[in-house]
Amino acid sequence: MSIRLGAVLAEQSDKLRHEPTAKRVRAFVGAEVAVDSERAVLVWEPHQAIPTYAVPREDVVVQIIDVKPGEKAPNGAPSHDIPGFRVILRASAGSPEGSGYVADDPDLSDFVILDFSSFDRWLEEDEEIDSHPRDPFHRVDVRSTSRHIQVMMNGQLLADTVHGKLLYETTLPTRYYLPTEDVLTPLTPSPTRTLCPYKGQASYWSFTLDGQAVEDLVWSYEDPLEDAAGLKGYLAFYDDKVEVLLDKNLADAD
Image 1 (cartoon, helix red, strand yellow):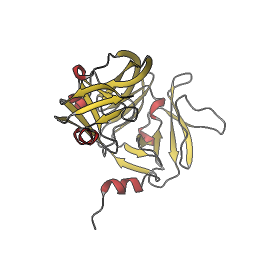
Image 2 (cartoon, one colour):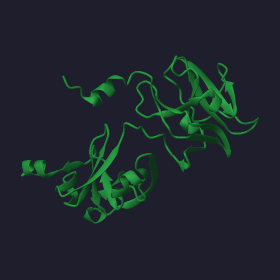
Image 3 (cartoon, rainbow, N blue to C red):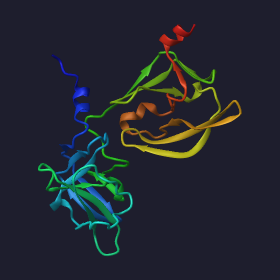
Image 4 (cartoon, rainbow, N blue to C red):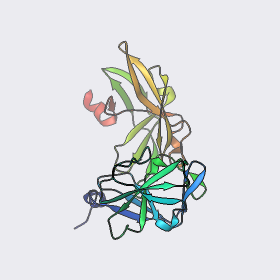
Protein backbone atom coordinates (compact mmCIF):
# COMPACT_ATOMS: atom_id res chain seq x y z
CA MET A 1 0.00 0.00 0.00
CA SER A 2 1.36 3.40 -0.99
CA ILE A 3 2.12 5.86 1.83
CA ARG A 4 1.26 9.53 1.53
CA LEU A 5 4.36 11.38 2.69
CA GLY A 6 2.49 14.40 4.01
CA ALA A 7 0.46 12.12 6.26
CA VAL A 8 3.63 10.49 7.59
CA LEU A 9 5.10 13.87 8.55
CA ALA A 10 1.81 14.95 10.13
CA GLU A 11 1.70 11.78 12.24
CA GLN A 12 5.04 12.73 13.81
CA SER A 13 4.09 16.31 14.62
CA ASP A 14 3.48 15.59 18.31
CA LYS A 15 7.08 14.38 18.75
CA LEU A 16 10.42 16.12 19.16
CA ARG A 17 12.08 15.95 15.72
CA HIS A 18 15.48 16.89 14.33
CA GLU A 19 17.43 16.88 11.07
CA PRO A 20 21.16 17.63 10.55
CA THR A 21 22.23 20.45 8.24
CA ALA A 22 25.55 20.94 6.44
CA LYS A 23 25.32 24.75 6.73
CA ARG A 24 27.69 26.71 8.93
CA VAL A 25 25.45 28.54 11.40
CA ARG A 26 26.35 31.59 13.47
CA ALA A 27 24.25 33.51 15.98
CA PHE A 28 25.11 36.90 17.52
CA VAL A 29 24.22 38.67 20.75
CA GLY A 30 24.82 42.33 20.10
CA ALA A 31 27.91 42.45 17.90
CA GLU A 32 29.46 39.33 19.45
CA VAL A 33 29.39 35.84 18.00
CA ALA A 34 27.67 33.57 20.52
CA VAL A 35 27.38 30.42 18.39
CA ASP A 36 29.56 29.18 15.54
CA SER A 37 28.80 25.67 14.34
CA GLU A 38 29.28 23.40 11.34
CA ARG A 39 27.37 20.62 13.15
CA ALA A 40 24.00 22.27 13.69
CA VAL A 41 20.71 20.41 13.53
CA LEU A 42 17.24 21.75 12.85
CA VAL A 43 14.83 20.98 15.69
CA TRP A 44 11.04 20.93 15.61
CA GLU A 45 9.46 20.89 19.05
CA PRO A 46 6.24 18.92 19.57
CA HIS A 47 3.26 20.45 17.75
CA GLN A 48 5.50 23.09 16.14
CA ALA A 49 5.74 23.47 12.35
CA ILE A 50 8.59 25.99 12.47
CA PRO A 51 12.10 24.75 13.26
CA THR A 52 14.90 26.36 15.19
CA TYR A 53 18.60 25.51 15.38
CA ALA A 54 20.39 23.39 17.95
CA VAL A 55 24.17 23.18 18.19
CA PRO A 56 26.64 21.06 20.19
CA ARG A 57 27.49 22.69 23.52
CA GLU A 58 31.13 23.07 22.47
CA ASP A 59 30.03 25.22 19.50
CA VAL A 60 28.61 27.83 21.87
CA VAL A 61 31.53 30.27 22.11
CA VAL A 62 30.16 32.30 25.04
CA GLN A 63 29.36 31.30 28.60
CA ILE A 64 26.42 28.91 29.14
CA ILE A 65 24.56 29.56 32.37
CA ASP A 66 21.80 27.32 33.70
CA VAL A 67 18.67 29.34 34.47
CA LYS A 68 17.71 28.92 38.11
CA PRO A 69 14.05 28.27 38.97
CA GLY A 70 12.24 31.60 38.94
CA GLU A 71 15.06 33.42 37.15
CA LYS A 72 13.91 35.47 34.19
CA ALA A 73 15.19 34.41 30.78
CA PRO A 74 16.06 36.98 28.08
CA ASN A 75 13.21 38.71 26.30
CA GLY A 76 11.81 36.72 23.40
CA ALA A 77 12.59 33.35 24.97
CA PRO A 78 9.57 31.07 24.53
CA SER A 79 8.46 28.30 26.83
CA HIS A 80 9.34 24.77 25.74
CA ASP A 81 7.00 21.80 25.48
CA ILE A 82 9.79 19.31 26.19
CA PRO A 83 11.49 18.08 29.37
CA GLY A 84 14.85 19.66 30.11
CA PHE A 85 16.31 22.91 31.43
CA ARG A 86 16.76 26.46 30.14
CA VAL A 87 20.14 28.11 29.67
CA ILE A 88 21.38 31.65 29.08
CA LEU A 89 24.19 32.41 26.61
CA ARG A 90 26.17 35.34 28.00
CA ALA A 91 29.26 36.93 26.48
CA SER A 92 30.16 39.05 29.50
CA ALA A 93 28.53 40.74 32.48
CA GLY A 94 26.09 43.38 31.34
CA SER A 95 26.25 42.33 27.70
CA PRO A 96 23.24 41.22 25.64
CA GLU A 97 22.13 37.64 26.17
CA GLY A 98 20.71 34.86 24.09
CA SER A 99 18.88 31.86 25.44
CA GLY A 100 18.32 28.22 24.74
CA TYR A 101 17.21 24.91 26.10
CA VAL A 102 18.85 21.56 26.79
CA ALA A 103 16.40 18.74 26.15
CA ASP A 104 16.18 15.64 28.28
CA ASP A 105 16.47 13.52 25.15
CA PRO A 106 19.26 11.01 24.39
CA ASP A 107 19.72 12.23 20.81
CA LEU A 108 19.88 15.92 21.72
CA SER A 109 21.22 16.00 25.29
CA ASP A 110 24.62 17.28 24.08
CA PHE A 111 22.98 20.10 22.10
CA VAL A 112 21.64 23.52 23.03
CA ILE A 113 18.32 24.22 21.32
CA LEU A 114 18.49 27.94 20.56
CA ASP A 115 15.66 30.44 20.99
CA PHE A 116 15.90 32.04 17.57
CA SER A 117 14.27 35.37 18.48
CA SER A 118 16.54 35.96 21.48
CA PHE A 119 19.54 36.51 19.21
CA ASP A 120 20.23 39.74 17.34
CA ARG A 121 21.60 38.32 14.11
CA TRP A 122 21.85 34.99 12.32
CA LEU A 123 24.05 33.80 9.47
CA GLU A 124 23.82 30.65 7.38
CA GLU A 125 27.29 30.56 5.84
CA ASP A 126 27.71 34.30 5.05
CA GLU A 127 24.07 35.14 4.38
CA GLU A 128 21.64 36.73 6.83
CA ILE A 129 18.45 34.88 7.75
CA ASP A 130 15.38 36.39 9.38
CA SER A 131 12.24 35.18 11.12
CA HIS A 132 13.26 31.51 11.49
CA PRO A 133 15.36 28.89 9.67
CA ARG A 134 14.00 27.35 6.50
CA ASP A 135 12.47 23.91 6.72
CA PRO A 136 14.22 21.59 4.21
CA PHE A 137 10.91 19.76 3.74
CA HIS A 138 9.06 22.99 2.91
CA ARG A 139 9.18 24.54 -0.53
CA VAL A 140 7.68 27.42 -2.48
CA ASP A 141 6.69 27.23 -6.14
CA VAL A 142 5.35 30.19 -8.13
CA ARG A 143 3.56 29.41 -11.38
CA SER A 144 2.00 31.74 -13.96
CA THR A 145 -1.60 30.94 -14.85
CA SER A 146 -4.13 32.03 -17.47
CA ARG A 147 -7.02 30.83 -15.30
CA HIS A 148 -9.67 33.45 -14.77
CA ILE A 149 -9.34 34.72 -11.19
CA GLN A 150 -11.82 37.13 -9.62
CA VAL A 151 -11.82 38.42 -6.06
CA MET A 152 -15.14 39.41 -4.53
CA MET A 153 -16.18 40.89 -1.19
CA ASN A 154 -19.73 41.77 -0.13
CA GLY A 155 -20.82 41.27 -3.73
CA GLN A 156 -18.29 43.77 -5.09
CA LEU A 157 -15.56 42.89 -7.58
CA LEU A 158 -12.14 43.79 -6.15
CA ALA A 159 -9.84 42.19 -8.74
CA ASP A 160 -10.15 40.44 -12.09
CA THR A 161 -7.33 38.82 -14.08
CA VAL A 162 -6.25 36.10 -16.48
CA HIS A 163 -2.58 36.92 -15.82
CA GLY A 164 -2.23 35.71 -12.26
CA LYS A 165 0.38 33.79 -10.32
CA LEU A 166 -0.35 30.76 -8.17
CA LEU A 167 1.78 30.22 -5.08
CA TYR A 168 2.11 26.60 -4.02
CA GLU A 169 3.66 26.30 -0.56
CA THR A 170 4.04 23.05 1.35
CA THR A 171 1.16 22.32 3.78
CA LEU A 172 -0.48 25.70 3.02
CA PRO A 173 -3.47 26.50 0.80
CA THR A 174 -2.80 27.81 -2.70
CA ARG A 175 -2.53 31.60 -2.76
CA TYR A 176 -3.68 33.69 -5.71
CA TYR A 177 -1.55 36.67 -6.73
CA LEU A 178 -2.83 39.27 -9.17
CA PRO A 179 -1.03 41.95 -11.19
CA THR A 180 -1.28 45.37 -9.62
CA GLU A 181 -3.09 46.75 -12.66
CA ASP A 182 -5.85 44.10 -12.35
CA VAL A 183 -6.76 45.08 -8.79
CA LEU A 184 -9.81 47.29 -9.29
CA THR A 185 -10.22 48.83 -5.84
CA PRO A 186 -7.94 51.73 -4.78
CA LEU A 187 -5.40 50.63 -2.20
CA THR A 188 -3.74 52.56 0.61
CA PRO A 189 -0.28 51.52 1.88
CA SER A 190 -0.16 50.25 5.47
CA PRO A 191 2.83 50.45 7.84
CA THR A 192 2.38 46.75 8.67
CA ARG A 193 5.28 44.47 7.71
CA THR A 194 5.85 40.74 8.21
CA LEU A 195 8.79 38.49 7.44
CA CYS A 196 8.75 35.10 5.75
CA PRO A 197 12.03 33.16 5.42
CA TYR A 198 10.86 31.69 2.10
CA LYS A 199 9.39 34.77 0.41
CA GLY A 200 10.85 37.85 2.13
CA GLN A 201 9.29 40.93 3.70
CA ALA A 202 5.60 41.51 3.01
CA SER A 203 4.09 44.98 2.70
CA TYR A 204 0.38 45.41 3.42
CA TRP A 205 -2.41 47.45 1.89
CA SER A 206 -5.85 48.58 3.01
CA PHE A 207 -8.94 49.77 1.14
CA THR A 208 -12.42 51.14 1.73
CA LEU A 209 -15.55 49.11 1.01
CA ASP A 210 -19.10 50.37 1.55
CA GLY A 211 -17.64 53.29 3.49
CA GLN A 212 -15.76 51.02 5.90
CA ALA A 213 -11.98 50.70 6.12
CA VAL A 214 -10.70 47.18 5.48
CA GLU A 215 -7.24 47.03 7.05
CA ASP A 216 -4.28 44.93 5.91
CA LEU A 217 -6.32 42.56 3.74
CA VAL A 218 -3.89 42.78 0.80
CA TRP A 219 -0.18 42.13 0.77
CA SER A 220 2.73 42.03 -1.65
CA TYR A 221 6.41 41.11 -1.70
CA GLU A 222 8.02 44.16 -3.24
CA ASP A 223 11.52 42.69 -3.09
CA PRO A 224 10.92 38.93 -2.82
CA LEU A 225 13.56 36.33 -2.11
CA GLU A 226 14.85 34.17 -4.94
CA ASP A 227 12.32 31.34 -4.55
CA ALA A 228 9.45 33.82 -4.75
CA ALA A 229 10.91 36.20 -7.35
CA GLY A 230 7.90 35.66 -9.62
CA LEU A 231 5.65 37.44 -7.11
CA LYS A 232 7.24 40.84 -7.65
CA GLY A 233 4.59 43.29 -8.84
CA TYR A 234 1.70 41.08 -7.71
CA LEU A 235 -0.83 41.40 -4.88
CA ALA A 236 -2.70 38.79 -2.85
CA PHE A 237 -5.91 38.92 -0.77
CA TYR A 238 -6.61 36.91 2.37
CA ASP A 239 -8.65 34.04 0.96
CA ASP A 240 -10.59 33.49 4.19
CA LYS A 241 -11.91 37.07 4.13
CA VAL A 242 -12.79 37.39 0.45
CA GLU A 243 -14.33 35.11 -2.15
CA VAL A 244 -11.94 33.90 -4.84
CA LEU A 245 -13.66 32.66 -8.00
CA LEU A 246 -11.81 30.49 -10.53
CA ASP A 247 -12.89 29.18 -13.93
CA LYS A 248 -14.85 26.30 -12.49
CA ASN A 249 -16.82 28.07 -9.80
CA LEU A 250 -17.34 31.06 -12.10
CA ALA A 251 -19.20 28.70 -14.44
CA ASP A 252 -21.09 27.21 -11.49
CA ALA A 253 -22.14 30.70 -10.37
CA ASP A 254 -23.74 31.57 -13.75
